[in-house]
Every structure is written in C-alpha cells, then in structure tokens.
Image 1: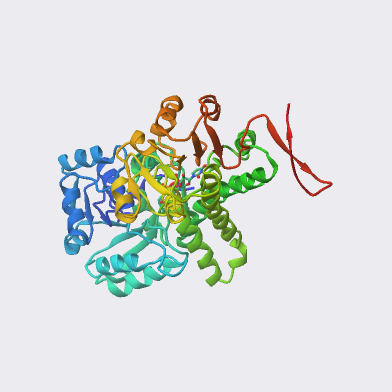
Image 2: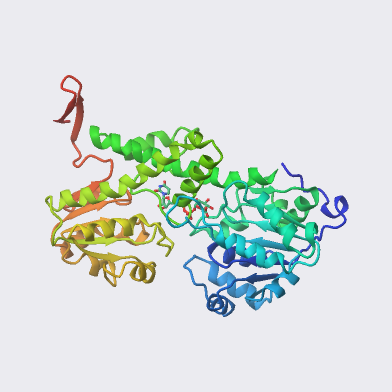
Length: 476
Ligand code: UGA
C-alpha cells in the first residue's frame, strides 16, 4: 500500500497542488471534473462536443445523477471549473491530465472500441510541451497503457517527459459523487515513483482520510477494473443461475439469497436475484475482458464469463415467458404495462437496459406495450420510438392485462396494490426485480410472479427422483 509520506520532499519535481485537465465530459469525466474542483483543484474539462460543453458551462448536466448538478453549479460559481473544446488551452493548463472518454463495445465484436481513447490521447499529446502526467481512468483492455505510453512519447513535443499512469474509476451511477469523494480504495498504476507521487497529489485529502491506496504497475491497474466488474457480474449471475434451479424445483431464490447473505464470506451485496445486470459497464466489460483474454492466449481462464453473460441474457427471456404465462399463453393484443426503462433506479441511463430489452421483446411478440420510467423517458423514446409511453405510473397500468416491474424505482415499490387493482384490467403482475411485497399483492387479489419464486405460497414442488421429473405437492 502507498504510504502518504511527504510527497514534495521525496520528489522535488512533484507539484503539490496540480492544475488538472479532464478529457471527456460523459458520466465519468463530468463527475471527476466536478469532484476534483470540489476538492479545491483548478480544473479545465475538455470535450469535442461543443453543445455538451456549452450545456455544462451553463451549469446544466446532460445526465440524471443525484446531487451532481448542484455541485457543478457550486464549482462553476467558485471559478474552480471551466469547460472548453480547445485542446491547446487544456493541454497548457494541466499538470495532470485525466483521460475519461468512453470505451464502448465495438460494433460487430466483443472487443472494446478504443477509438475515443486513442483520439483523445493523441490530440492531447500533440500539444504537451512540458513535463506532465497523463492518467487514464477509462476502462481499457490490459496492455492499452503500455501502448499509449509509446504513443505519447512518440507524439508529444516534450517526449518522454510526459509520463502515463492508470487510475481506474469504480463509481456507480446514482452514487457517482459519493463514490468519487469517498472511494473504497484508490488504485495507482504507475511506471515511476514521480508519477505515483504526482498522482497522489491529486487525492491528498482523500488519502489523508484513510482511503486505502493500492500502488501497482500499469497492467495490474487496468486489470483491477475489469476483474472487479467481472466479479460483480458473476455474483449477480450466480444468484440468477440459482433462480433457474429454483424455478425447476419450486424452491424460492429470495429465501435462498437471504440465507446465503448471512455468511460473511459471501455477503448480500450484488446477490439480488431478478432481471439481471445491464448498463454501460458490466455487460461490455465482461465481453471485452473475455475477448482480450482470448487474444492473450488465456481465454480458458475467463471462459466462465461467457456463461455469466448467457445466464444474464436468459433472465430477460424468462421474464417475457412469465408475462406470457400470465397473459394466458399468447401476448397478441395484450396490454402490458412495463414499469421502468433505466438499467437501474436513480439513473436515466438506458444502455443495455434489461427493462427496455424486455419491453422490446414483448412488443415484438404482439403485446401492446406501455412504458413508464420516472427519469429515462426521453432516452427511451429516442432509442425505442415504436413503444408507447405513459406520463405516469397510473396511466401506464390503466387497462393493463399484465403489469411488469422491470426497474426497481422507489415509486414502484411504494405503489399501493389495492389502488393499482382498481386501474388494471387484470390483476397480474411480474416482479422482475424482487422489489415488491408479494404477500401484500396477493392479499390485494393479484397473481404475483417473480423470477425464481414459486407461483403460490403454500405450494412446494418436490423433486420426484424415481420418475426423474417434477411433482407438485401441497405443503399443507
Ligand atoms: C458498475 C460498477 O458497480 C462500478 O463499480 C463501476 O465503476 C461501473 O460499473 C463502471 O465500470 O463504470 P454501474 O454500471 O453504475 O456500476 O451499476 P451497478 O450498480 O453495478 O449495477 C449494474 C447492474 O446490475 C444494474 O442493471 C443492476 O440492476 C444490476 N444488479 C445489481 C442486479 O441485477 N443485482 C444486484 O444484486 C446488483
């Protein structure tokens, strides 16, 4: 672990209060720029998208992230953060340049698309005329930092005076500010003691607060991020695989998850069964990791990630199957209320959103789908113009033959099953996120179904080993 001794005395050329540039103003970049400014650094954020820069400079956040817009306005008013599209200005400003551009899944491949990272680093490097540090925060395949180091040394007028470090980000959407200012750990992948000390100078107060710092080489730092996301995805798919087994046996995955969670070695976080993971990170990161491992000749080591992905995708189809079952076996012309569009609550992000994938499949099967989400409506409408959208929860469920809860917003958890019962055509509900109180719904006359849970309390299905099949028996 890195010990925060006196940085300046150990490394005379370290700037203790570095000026900071953040390249890329998406989720990661906007949050990082605002948080660095909140920590007191003088920050310039750079993007190629003029409209986005104008929006941010006016104090408007293009994404929904609780608390971030207020903080943006605070640092703008304090003069701590400026936005620009001028690479020369940003390059001249920063003693430390954070690269925060996106690394989406490449079209037609599982690999990560590094076009934006390469373009950002190349454009920046061309304007670097003095000693400084470039720090990658984007999630990249192992080996990218080593390749970029060579690129920077060849491209920057300052040559090898410009060093490169990797400092992965672990923030969750919905908790971005908290995760950035109070991270569980900091990971510093560096190639020199100077780079390590200069990077530490960007997190002085966070380190002083006792945050663990893992100091390592570039490749390990890159790997930490994909390994962490792969572990989280695996944990979710593990419990969802257990849900599949529960469905075949009449066992209840929610009780199973509960019982497992009391084992401290397992823990209950990311063990929530349901529709599975989505978003701009977990799905593409496990695919890119499996792809990269293959090219490194160690594909077998992480071959299980293909299974993790497969289990996750099957949950979406299983949700559609449950809705179909409740609709009496045929979705044609059945009105289905899809509650939720975002990939998770407290976000308007619909990238690889399980909710919208399910809505799409229901629509393609002939259902009359109406979607409602408290924050993601604009994004959903833009990407799925064929679906119908409602202005409220009540409007969405009115006249519905089946209600499907696909994102666990508090608004949906808090809804009164007795009130909803007066609005729907048929009291049938699929709880895709294990978010609702099953007993309350059943008491209000609903046919309540959830992935991995038996359809009726009191009925337990025992395995009939002799006949090698399933036999439902009444528990009473
Ligand atoms: C994830 C990681 O949690 C962050 O640490 C990481 O920094 C980020 O990716 C990234 O790579 O940038 P995020 O995509 O914001 O963060 O979302 P999560 O909170 O991890 O949720 C991912 C998905 O898993 C959601 O669709 C959520 O509904 C689902 N999930 C989560 C479950 O299905 N079950 C659970 O128990 C937990």
